[in-house]
Image (cartoon, rainbow, N blue to C red; front, top):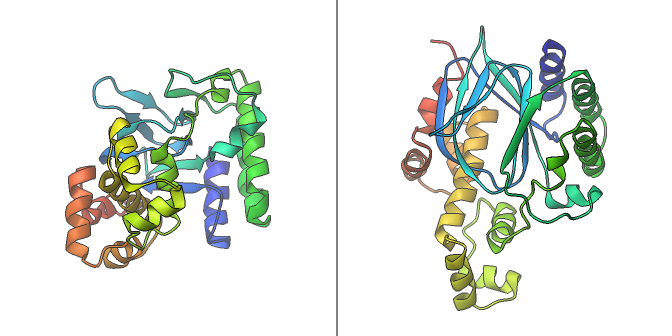
Length: 268
């Protein structure tokens, strides 16, 4: 796993925009209600990840877990030796076009070991990402999915949930995350009335404000974990004029403040 860690660190130094993210810490992180809007491949390269609050799913060093785009999840990131280090790849619905539709699955995750084939595929993916344009990212992500499928994890072809109205709203708001899009703007983009929008969201067990908060705070969580931006700047990038308001809502959703989460990334 050391080669993958080294390659990921080099890629982060060479390019700002990459088709993957790196999450690392030197102290244990406990975060609740993490929204999973798009399918995620999480590869634990050092340390241990535990997911869930009742029956924990354990992902040790050298393992991966693939999460569908349906659950909110509680997680713990536990360092081993010097740090916890995970590579995270987010997939779009279109990335699964390489599979024929087989109907929805009841599974929301599957996990396995990072064998030599997957390790080499990840190594190539990381190194390639430092010089290839973003227009090629989808091709390599589809290749990654096919490798996982042919390694015997057939459930990857059905793990994704069909995009709901909530997912469509998430994509629209994500594209304007620093703004507060009005209901009128959103209904125009979705070509439906406000009453229809609210009724359909209610049927999905959510609301417009909940989705807005999940998008903005989810992006804030990502920035706290992966950037060096000050918390005030992160609040602005997420559309909050007040850092204290951002911190309050962040703590309410994730069970930890942005500042305390940042402290897990550095030694005392």
